[in-house]
Structure formats: structure tokens, C-alpha cells
Length: 454
Ligand SMILES: Nc1nc2c(ncn2[C@@H]2O[C@H](COP(=O)(O)OP(=O)(O)OP(=O)(O)O)[C@@H](O)[C@H]2O)c(=O)[nH]1
Ligand SMILES: [K+]
Ligand SMILES: [Mg+2]
Image: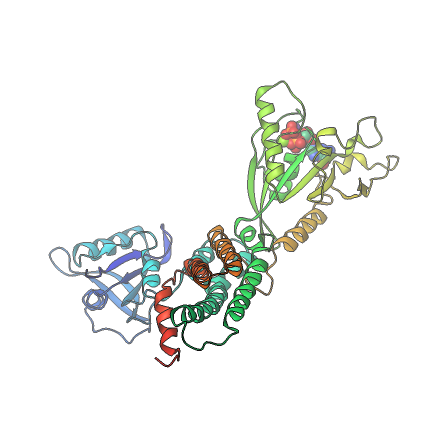
């Protein structure tokens, strides 16, 4: 089937100084020459050209543009490709789109179609495609760095490296099975087992990373929890620097979980305000409290807000419901320090139940800087990029777990045929991650180099 030539606006919709159109496919050069009424410019050089409309009665200029000609395969898609940098007005954009469709019969690209073509033409593998998608979606510095690594092939090299070693082991094993009469080295099976064990160990270490790569993509989830009126919503607003949640003196104000995203020192964080924890007969509030506990269980970090005005009174500083949530993933915050800290008042505690406590005032902003710093430290510790590339997607995790299981089975298998089958499944699972799957092709290549006197 003939490959179609597609076009799309590469920049975001709406009015802008400049917008970029991309055209990819076999018709690209013809369209560019006709559209500019000029010969093709030198490859990969930006040149200024008038774009002409051939639509309607007489020729008419559409826009004054910068055009770049990328002959395939040295282009993003691997096909002949053209970039048109035009003025980003709605009228120019629609005039050009109309021209490309009506005069040249080009098809508007579907979502991801340019990248799909890049993948089909071997310009990117699947992890690189995903890295590119993450780079485009990156909101914080750490996300950008992780995405850049992956788009640059760091994960691809890691997984392909493991796969290549396993394919080699598989080729040797298959040779032993297919040519049993030949004199094969006696240490062949142990060597295959050794290769499987080494890969299994490396994959195990990679899987056991506290999900930091996946967390970095999603953001660290922090839940703000505590008794009614402790000042949770006030704290959320203070951290967000806007009035995101309703604050009132009435206990039981917040019902729904209110979520917002923050950039904490380059790390993405999802902050959730929740209903005040208490036993209640109000059905709606009770549902809110249930959701708060659910959120507490799902959160990476719990920010437990205590009401500092309870200091030096009969009221307990830590209420029974909040006490249930104190564990290693909890950070205690003593709010309303502005009220609690009088010259005659009781001293602020620095720890409760062995957990450090930060004194803050959501009202005045006192202590908030220290709190942000503490949260940033936690986010950094949980999300920071290590030297080895991190696992970033559930899809990869699932395939790696399948690979690992196959390796463990295969290492135990007595029969070489069964060992080989598991090894083949392990190789297959790794190949699915990058999308470079064809085992047979690699086996053929390796077999050809195999010298068994045949
Ligand atoms: N003085 C003082 N008042 C505060 C502070 N933080 C919150 N408040 C007040 O405490 C009351 C309750 O604040 P909220 O932020 O609504 O408390 P909450 O924990 O979200 O309450 P619920 O949603 O009902 O559980 C409001 O009147 C706030 O103005 C603080 O740091 N200092
Ligand atoms: K309240
Ligand atoms: Mg609230």
C-alpha cells in the first residue's frame, strides 16, 4: 500500500507569534516546491519563502514563512519531511491547512502519527517514543531530566543489552539441542544458566527501585490529614499560594478530596486536602472522612496537621483519629503557631511519639518555608534520579516481571528444550518493551556466525 503524505500543526493550537506545520511522506518535496513556487532549498537549512495558494482563481500569497526541507531518511519520521514556520494566527493556519488538503490532497495526521512513522521506520524504539511523550508532558525539572534520558535511549540500551546477552545464551542452547551429536563444550549449559542468573539479578535490582521512576512521572502524592479545623485547607492554600480550598471556622468544611499539583524544588507533587477526621452522623461528612482515610492509605507521604491551640489545654494535641495515621510515612505539623506561641504559653514540642514536629502558621506563613524544604527533601529522597536509568512505566514493569519469572523457571528446568522455551519467553518479554521483537531474525544472524562445521 502506498504511504500517504500527512500534515499537522506541530505547535499548540491558538494564536501565537509563530506556528509550525509539518508535512511527512512521499509528496513532501512536490508540495514544498509548488507551495513556494521555488526549487527545493538545501536540506536542513532554514530559508525564507512566500507560501502561495493555488486554490481559487488566481494565485495569492498565504504567508511569508521560514521553510526547512528534510529529505528522508535523515528526518524525524524517516520519511521526506517539511517544516513550515508560519505566523500563528487562526486565519493563516486555516488557510494553509485548507491549501494542503484541497490543492494537494494531503491528509490531516492522526494523533501520534508522525511518531508512529518514526517508530515504523526504526528512528525510535518504544521506550524512546514514551520518553518523548514524557518530555512533552514534563512539568518539572526532574521529570524533564528523566524523560530526556529515556528519549535519548538510556532505557533502550539497558533492556537491549540484557536481551542481547539472553539471545546469545539462547543461540548456544539451541545449537546444543539441534546438533546433539556435535562436540559442544561441556560447560555450555552452566554458561547458559549463568547468563540467565546474571540477567535475573540485574532485572531484580532494576525492579526493586521503590517505583521512583514511575513516581517521578506521576508526582509524589502527599495527603494533608488531621482533625476538623486543624487548618488543613488553610495549609493547602498557603502551599499553593492561592485560595484553592474553602476555609471556614466551621468544623467539617472540607468534604471532597481537593487535589492540586506543585513543583517542589524541581520535583512534581500532588497535594491533597481532605475532610477533618472524626466520627460523625452526617452521612456526607462520613463519606468525606472515609475518602480521607482512603487517601491516607494511598499517599506516599502523610502530612498530619495538629491544632497548636490545644497546647497547654485539656484537649489532646493528637486526636485519636489522627494518631492512627502516625507511621514512618508521616510528617507532623503543628499549625496555628501564631496562637500557641505566646511569651507565657507552653513551649512548642519538637517531637511527638518519636516523630519530629514542624511548627507552622498557615495564617501568617511562619514556618512554611521550612515545611516546603522538608517536603522537598522527602520528594528528592524518593524521586531523585540515580546513575542507572529508572523504570518509568507499569508496562515495562509487567514485561520485566514476566521476563524474570521465565528466567527463574528456566534456570530450574532440567530438560534443555524446556530451558530454551523459558529463555525464549524471557527474550520475548524484553523485546516487547522496546518493540524490537523479532527473535528469529536475531537467532538467524547469530546462527550464521556459529561455527559447528556445517
Ligand atoms: N490563627 C490561626 N488560625 C488558623 C490557622 N490555620 C487555620 N486557621 C483558622 O482555623 C479555622 C479552620 O481552618 P481550615 O483551614 O478550614 O481548617 P480545616 O482543617 O481544613 O477544617 P475542616 O475542613 O473543617 O476539617 C479557620 O477559621 C482558619 O482561619 C493558623 O495558622 N492560625
Ligand atoms: K473548617
Ligand atoms: Mg478543610
